[in-house]
Length: 225
Image (cartoon, rainbow, N blue to C red; front, top):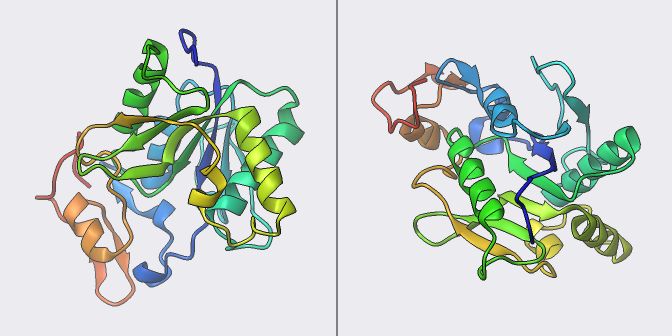
């Protein structure tokens, strides 16, 4: 896949239940003086268009699109499908690549920058269907990846045809894609699922059980919450 000029849209997922955070929306948690959602939008800078999939989009920059998966809370695969459809309905012709990014990784900007550089570089390790982040411990993070728009749309269509898109897994959605694994900076795909995660990453928010929580001594991705 050539990527000398990286032309892409972005789908940002912000529609989970946040059950292990007591229902506090992840996108509203803060790090380095900004919400995780706005940090994710900033990580996608350079995109031709950005769509946020989820409820209560919050304070977003002008021009950012919003939509919701149907039914609500039907999982990230359905959310990706909804985001792709919203971009298609709004813009028509799509760029060759789509960035898919979860909103709960405060260091995602570093991962996205590394993925972009890998795609631009190309070379023998490049894969035809895109590139996916791999953490320092070797785990793939499919919610931080650039995917070929046409193959991703086809994967959504095929999963929906099997009745498996609603509440389906991202692993199943991407199973047919030939992806380039890209090692990204340590911690850049660390996500917030629990209040302990938030504390470890220096992410602040209001825990309904314990009040406002922050951790000024946490690992730094370029600032403190």
